[in-house]
Image (cartoon, rainbow, N blue to C red; front, side, top):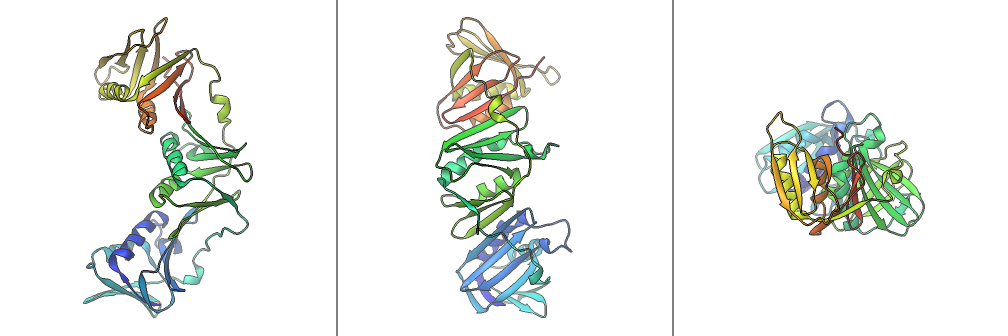
Length: 355
């Protein structure tokens, strides 16, 4: 292989590979990226077996087609310090040579034939959805996804396809976030996507995506990117059972004012007591270890009696950060029961702090 490619194009592709390579074990082939020139296209692949990315560009010059591999971190470090000009990549005696003017680097290659195969879309179902709807939905539920739960299935997002609806669900057992979209579904299936994969999808894709899946793999494609992730095997909790079907109180609250007062008290403590009176909402810190805080929002709640919740304010702030509307609904039954935050097709159920 011998090619010429602009430094910035190459660097951009290599940057996108970094979260997909194994940085701990440099002896593993998954610490390398696979570089391929064929059919008037330059491709880079990276995978740690669990997730993978495949990028391509036609913005290069092929002198001789072929394949190469290189340590993903080292080649990026080398390319970063080069000038904004063309770079030559060439395979010589099982080494990858990187040349620009008077600068020359050499990296040992692994056997490119041993590089892991990427899954294909063949025999996989296709998931038709508006890309922005998909990306916004996973963004809304991401804060609620757990990161280190012994029940491994909770360390991912559930995409539940059934009854011509798509439910996006995340939970850390203290709260549950749910977005529902009306969509035509090819077949009912539940997919649990690792949280790491969700983060990469949000970085890589914008206004174009095609989604393919089976019981074990999900593939997301655009014109220049192909991403895959292994799915989490496991049984997700029955999230629909957790959603309150009836509530005694429904309050419509201004988002901006709520955020302002929550942040005032969260400076002292995230754990706070929120009391809803007939004509005001009072916010008080629960923990006295780091100080005390109290503030009042004049707000007509039209309640027959005062009610309160003890809560981690971060859960409410995460919800409010992901809604566009100026108002939201809080639904409540009792201070010891989960309460509901709602905005259009997005809801979050929050467990109160019991004291």
